[in-house]
Image (cartoon, rainbow, N blue to C red; front, side, top):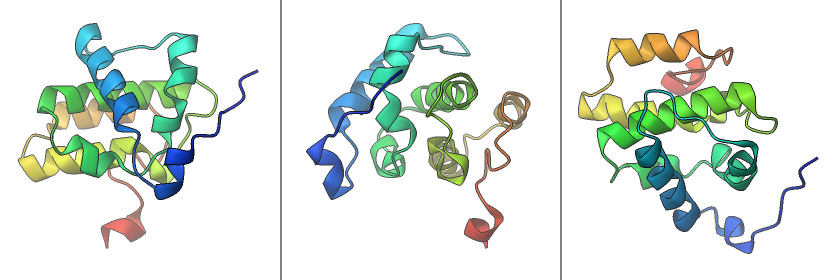
Length: 130
C-alpha cells in the first residue's frame, strides 16, 4: 500500500519542476517506444500523473520527449493504481502541444487509443474542445 506524501509546493499549483525533469530524463534514457516504470518509480512520480501544470512545463521540451511522456502516461494509467486521471490526464495537455507544433501524428493517435480505456484520450472532453 502506498501513501501519498504532502508537498507544500503543490499548494501554489505549480508543477514540481525538479520531479518533472527527473521523469523527462528517465523517458530519454529509456528511449524505446513504450517507456515503462517499475513500482518504485511509479510511486515516486505519481504526483505528476495528476498535475495540471504539464502544458506550461512541456512547452520547452522536444517533440521526442513529449511523445515519450505521452506513451508513459498512457501506459502507466492502465498499469498503476492512482495514475487514472480521466479528462485531467497529462496526455491531453501534451497532445495539445504536439498539435500546436504540427507534430501530432496519426500513428501516435492510433497508439494511444489502442493502449487505453480512458475515453478522454488523446483529445480531452468534448466540452473542453468547444
